[in-house]
Image (cartoon, rainbow over all chains, first blue to last red):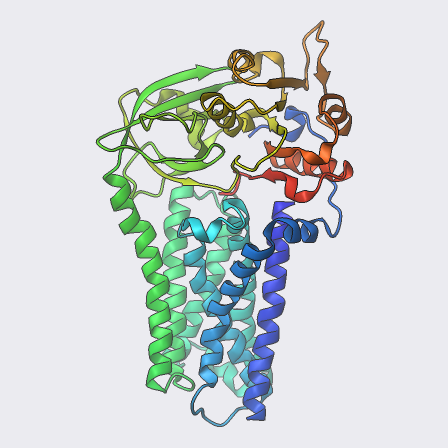
Length: 31
Length: 462
């Protein structure tokens, strides 16, 4: 289960980072 | 390595949602703070690029690809921090979870770094020409070098055994590739000079890279220097039952360190602390010893441990520790220790410490072994019953003729037979092979024991 916890953390991090990269691009394009 | 079947454990079945409940129950505040800090170190340098003035945008696709490129590089850089053995970095989760996170998040980082050029090639096909490193400018060559290094790094990490690389050779290559990947990545960003044309933004990213590399210098050069000045001497190599040996180590010229029962340290037997040859082992001795002496009990399971019985008495060794969040100290009416095979090691440290401290709280030890002859610390456990309110339940996978005790697997029935109710009031500590630990955690879940009441730490993380 501890591995599962690490994997959930990884998944959460990946989703947040991709979302924030999209937000970064949106803010840039929108000016 | 002994298998779960040999140790006598049922295979695990994990339920969805268990990890989430465990996270909420045990790691609410500190775990959240940890992940927020981690994300801050990835995202703050990215969003800092939006401060002040910036050049005209190049479309959503290009800017998105740039965003994931920067974030991917920051994640790679932070990998140096995850493995820098800072106690406060690993404490909220435990060393094993952080190392597993380190391995898995590297796949995400590489995916982001590889996705960066792929998205660019899709939205701006003219950039595909940059793949030709003979004609491409240096800024593109650095990008290629960084990406290829990362891919090689991941391939070697995943298939190290198939590639027949020794742990030491792999580790050195791993470090070199990581340094090349991160440095080339930053040189690519500076060379492209789009966002980093601004001096303070360039300074920020160069400073960040220097910080990441300084973490490596700390863990590989500065910390070993401190460890070198605090050596230990092997004073005894004691055979135990079950193809297992105890190394007794005395600090040489210093007072040693204090540890909590259940913690572990990285042991270097051959070579200096600068050499990449340390291995993690739990302490098996009492944490209440006043002379700084520590003991580690190690079973012959292959690789480094294969020659543990040949370690000469008098040899100088080095210890980097203590580490780990698997420790007693929580107030509980009953401590329940669940050990499988050599997983008895941290439990012995707990039992010896409780005995030395005169702690009379009830302790129940459920101890799974292959057979009666291989039960490590069998005799000492019997004698500890006189100093502690201790009950030992042996569970044997291959019991001898006439055995009247428990056999087979440790399961919910064995828990119910030997533990006083209410089961959810006890504090559980679990150590053994991975499949056993999954199975026990599952069993405790079925018994409605709250997740914050049981503690486990896995040592098969390197």
